[in-house]
Length: 125
Image (cartoon, rainbow, N blue to C red; front, side, top):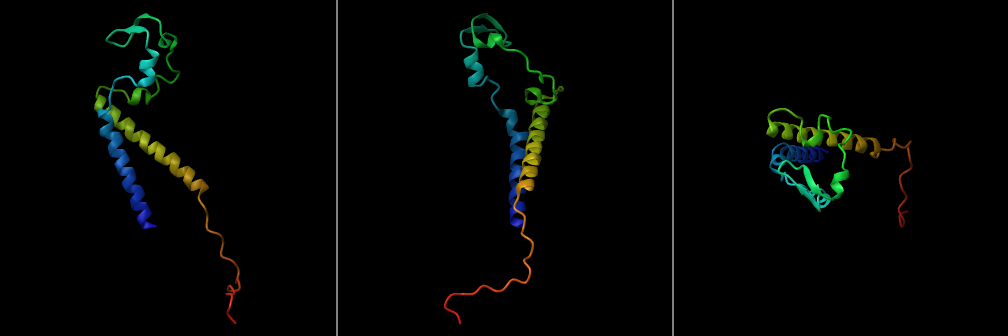
């Protein structure tokens, strides 16, 4: 049992380091879906559509766009710290929800059976 806890703690530590530090070095270029949605449009340096016709012209701001974790950051002046903290918070939240689900559906040990007779082995006796 102790080995399992060390394994879980080690995995959580690695995930926290990756989310808190390495996540800051991820590409800021648009992903495949964003670039596909922009095909056919001309875009300025700020990412605003200036002409053409594309799917992205019908895009709207998300209802939760002003929420604390929108845009992979917590807001504020320090982008590195903001992104790192949001990554750490995301890992901890995911770990808590996943751990809670596993705790709820885990197999529980059956209650000790009342003085059961020992099993009878074939060929004995």
